[in-house]
Image (tube, rainbow, N blue to C red):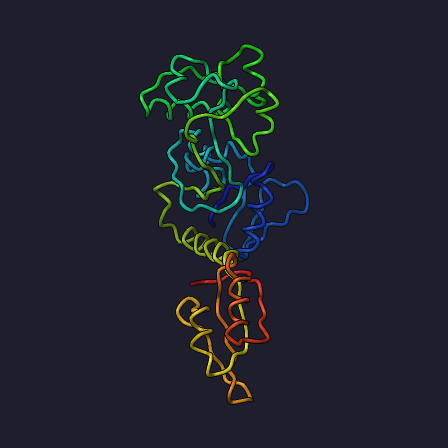
Length: 281
């Protein structure tokens, strides 16, 4: 039975359980139980605090877990990122009072308020800069005004909160984070984990593609097929009218409207688009 740690709250929680459900696993809880067993799927889900998940994975208490890349790196444990999951994206950056700092060298000897001590210390050390980290569990934007720190290092989304506190970002991003599936070297080849990864990859690809069906004159098939090459090749089926064929192909979701326009221009008609739930490529 594969043991998987899943975030029990926060921005990671709902997308993680949704992705596991789309991968075919049972995720619905009847109450607030912390453990959910899916006999058919061969997994056991443990609902834990996002910040604690890397610790449980690193110590081998569970085979794998879903958490943020930033939380994994800040944990300092012996666990590895196995698969990026494409949600909960964020950027981690330094910020200081407007106009006071412009590069990493400016933070030398300064106090940096953050909730990610290990991540920040490792980052500045790897670049030959020495700074003092001040650990805060949240609301680090107020630390500079209150004299606790000289600058902060935190997740930045729109920057609105920073500007309200009189701060601005500077330098290169410390990290670009997203939700990731993590495990340890010990479990990388575990059969249940291989299946889990294959299913999650199927969900990720299904979210990236749509299925396009259309009819096109046989004389224009080569033009239409060039627009929708599919993965290996489009599926072409005869119609009752021998001068026309039906075509089906996977198309990147981001390109689908442009492809539909171009298909219509080359003579395709009855163009239909369907979402995919999962796939194996």
